[in-house]
Structures are given as structure tokens and as C-alpha cells.
Amino acid sequence: MDIPKAPKKSAAQVARAARLFKALQTRYPTAHCALNWSQPHELLIATILSAQSTDVGVNKATPALFAAFPTPRDFANASPAKIEPYVKTLNFWRNKAKAVHESMRIVCEQFHGEVPRDMKQLLTLRGVARKTANVVLGNAFDMQMGVVVDTHVGRLARRMGLSKHEDPVDVEADLMGLFPRADWCVLSHLLIAHGRDACKARGESCKSDLICREFCINAKVPTTRSTKAATSNKPVNLKLKKSKSLKPVAKQSRRP
Ligand code: SF4
Image 1 (cartoon, rainbow, N blue to C red):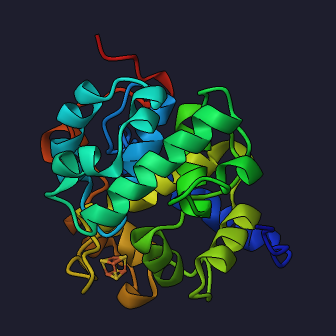
Image 2: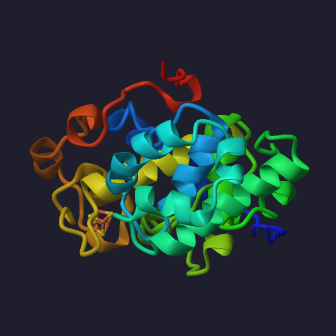
Image 3: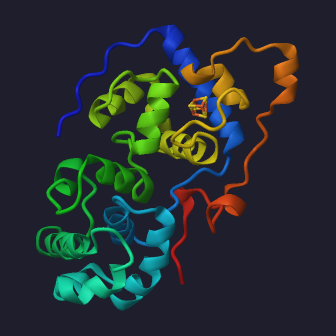
């Protein structure tokens, strides 16, 4: 799938995006992929399983799944029916079991048992669309080929004035035009962190959050000295709130 060319961004838009990035980084210094994994194929499977399910739910299911099927070949040799019991707690578990089996079969038959490091090849795997491919390339291989646009990223991008589009591919193109390539992977983690921490679907932190007040169209009120003092951009400890690991994803070590 080709990414449409992003409309050229002005220097002011790029500078504003850089200010937002810095503010998010200050607030969420440990933002990282919330899925637990230790090998690229595990991240691929966890991401397939995360569609229409929470990362927390996926992380509860995957330890037993990965223990039962340690390698891509083990998944490929199993039938979907053998995989199903391990993912039954997740939405669409039957389809997901099929997608996991089929994707690992293709990995084994066409890619020598290795998850491909290529967007086009990843998109040939069942259950893998551009978002999943970006998650794998960015987090497992540190390859910045695009920006992961999930519901949080899409919502925040529109509310923060980064994109006017609804289609995730168009939102991705706008983000790619606004932020340096080296930041694309962590950008999605930062937006997801803010989406989860401050900006629920109804925008509960509107007008009381310093980042929101400066950047979001829903909270556009004049920032006075007194309101600045009333809010803060203190770092949020995502470990306590969301995740077991504080390690940056790119440096995530393999589980024993
Ligand atoms: S101002 Fe409200 S809608 Fe905008 S990002 Fe913050 S919480 Fe979300």
C-alpha cells in the first residue's frame, strides 16, 4: 500500500509539531509499546491479536500462547483449532487463531521462518495491515517506515490540529510530513500514552491539562499565568499506571 504524499507543511506547522513532541516526551518519558514480546514473531502475533482487544487483555493471553508455541514453525505446524483455546478471551478469537496460524505458515514457507523486514512482504501475511506492519518494523527492527495510527493516534492527531483526515492512511501521511523520520515510532507511543492518560474518548482532561491547553482545539482557552501555575507537565510513570516494563522498546531484551 502506497502512502499518499503529505501536503507540504509550513515551517510554523513543523515547529509547532516539534513543541508538541517535546511536551509529550517530557510528560511520558517511558512511553513504549504496551504489548509484551521477546521475539519479532511474538510482536507480530500480539499485534494481530490486539485488533479490537485491549493490550492488557492480549498480554494476559500471550504468555501461555508463546510457551505452547515457541517458534513460528510451532504455530505453522499447529492447526487454528489448537491455537484457539489460548486466545478465547479475546474478541474475534476464531478469526485471530486462523490469522496467527496462516501468517506463521507464510513466514515459514516464504520467509525462511523469519518475520520479513519489509512493508510489502509484511502486508502479504494474513491479519497484517499497514498499522500492524508499522508496529513490527518500528518496534522489532527499529525501522521507521511510517507512523502507527490507531484510534488514539487518529483522534489526537485531529484534536491537536495535526491532521484533518479520518482515514488512517491520510493521517499517517500528515504525521510523516510534520515529524522527523527518526521520531515516527516513538511519536505513536507518545500520542497513545496521552490518549490513554489524559484524553479519553470524551476528552475528560480538556482545559485542565497543560499540553491540551496549548495544542488541542477542544481546550482552546487563553493560557494565563495563573492557569499555567495551576497545571503542570510532570512526567507520568507509565510503569505504575500501565505496564510492567519501563525499558524503551528498541532496547527490550529477550525474556529468559
Ligand atoms: S483537550 Fe480534551 S480532547 Fe483535546 S487532547 Fe486534551 S483531553 Fe483530549
